[in-house]
Image (cartoon, rainbow, N blue to C red; front, top):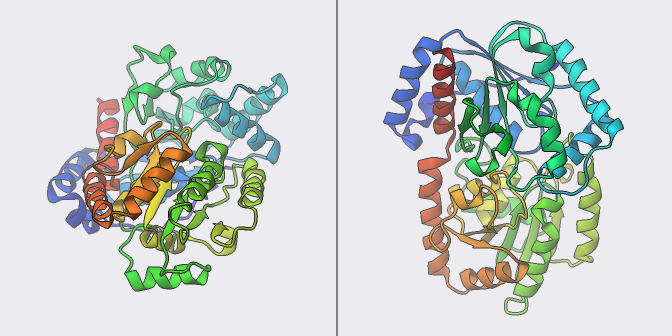
Length: 412
């Protein structure tokens, strides 16, 4: 059987003061006719990355408004996740693609997971490419099947898209962060939905943390809280460009010699490439005592990430490809000045010069870092505008509302 993810409870009422009474009332109204509907989320991992963070909140909130909702994890060995990591990269533009043998592995594990699915569900939501083939073998277990894409498909390698389009087309609906990500082969498909993701403002990673608590946590990891701190929180992945962040930091220290850098990330179970890139990043730092490279195996959890983001004088997300960039949303929510790559879903969140800065090179990132640190008033204004943009557009109740609208539409 697929592995069930154990979850705590959450109450929609707790979010009213953040999202507003109007949003909560609309959620309640839409949820009424859907009470008792069985909803299943299927993903590759319950740990590391934006998908799992979203589901740890979304699933309990779906339960709170009356739906019988579960979250299950697919099964797979290292050979499968090696292939799907390559698939992930190729869908984001890497010229390498899966071999014939790797596609056979992909189909094999999707077939096994489809056979392992049990129960009858009103809505089955399959997240990302790893389990996309499940509907083909398990369609009788779900009334409505939805595929949710969380990655940047704006410039994909054409080979994997051609291979996956027939599988995606079998779904009753497909959900994308942006219209630019929808492959040309799905144009005219009536089930295409555009829904940006969101963060949980009450989770340990995003809840309000006092300045003293943030400072205390950062000091435990060797940060001098009396000196400026630049921080990027993300997976250790070439698309997140931590090496480019180190280059930006080194350029900025020419004018700001006391600057420190923290690269903070988590190692996900479906990302075998992560350890190799973590090693490369560590070597590139060249034992600089002012560069801290940390992950969940250094006891960096949600509270620690919150502390680093809250303590940082500048937050960065210098992605080369980015489906959406929830770490950008997290930084905006904490009122920190954010400098991020002008790619993917990041420009949805940052209005350049108003709620942060968009950059394309390490040199631009360094220039903006120096500008913000030399003008504290600018940093505060960017932080305030960024938080309000996150509050209005990218909190979980809005995401729940979008899902309820989709369920209502599919039910007719």
